[in-house]
Length: 268
Length: 223
Image 1 (cartoon, rainbow over the protein chains, first blue to last red):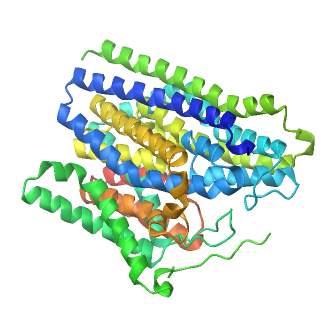
Image 2: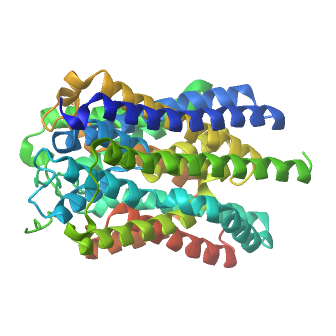
């Protein structure tokens, strides 16, 4: 049996998934209990749970797509482990491809890794590269929070509210700006252009999502539909994804793939 | 709720967070170690091109420090311990938490916000873990047809982020439009000069610009 996907690897994967599930469930139960103690209503808790489920489903499938993209080279279990813990799409692909390049035997993400030693190097590099936050957060977080509290403690609440909203806006702006003016990337597995830069489709996705959100919120407000207000955000995201699928089917390829700027392919 | 009880809850959160995070770190590193011991293969450092590896380690570790600092005021205590374990913070956990807090109408940094964002991040982590496990373990035969390059759903997966952040922006920017102008304008200009800057680099720039601009707007009395 392929060592990348044998029962030994499967057991390792299950142990990792079990550990992170225990942590998530523990904090979930603790937060719900705490919410009840401080008077957060059951409705708020219920809506938070349902809207978070809806919000997460589609991006989770996008993460599954990364696991699939890495699986011809690394098998399905290692990408599954890596994307379940800490991992994100860009970091894991970068770590894996650099690890393979460092072995220097011509291995790359374009071919199946058949040597156990090479595979083990990839495992170590991916784990060590991404695990740093798990070391620094237990050491730094409390002190960091104290520092932030001390800095903002003397200011009035209007200033604190505005600054906390503005930090969120800074994060959201990064993604909005990328959809408006970003240049796309090349797939580090296949070497092909990803068509993920800013262009007609990213703008259509962004605008559809904004319009859907405005319409759904207006409907919820006018007809006093409380549940719709709570789920307007995940529904807008899914509706916009539906628009993208329809556009991909009806638009000619030249228009569908239209991007404002195309990057130069990297050589080598 | 008196201050002492609050402090003790927060202290307990740190203790639980530290124990769980360090335990998962140990498990994470035990995976390659178990493989090494099981097959008796160990990386031969002398044969590796260490230059390349050191390069990505520096990059990843620097990103980890910047992300830890940037996300601390946004994620809450439990959210930090949870979110950094399951990852995909900026593209999933944080938007999920922001959406939940916005809908629940809780003040950022309050006890209620800590509860709501923790529930959102925990649920999001559980759903991601289950989705990945179900698809990887049970639906492997049909996986490629769902996610492959030419599949019906593939175009939508590529645009998950604009779809997600469009909805979030619509909700947030209408509330605080004055604060949103500066970071978007600056980041678009930055991207016009260097379009391939990854979003991980844009986030700290966006947050810094946004904080400075908001502080100035506050001083001038516009906020």
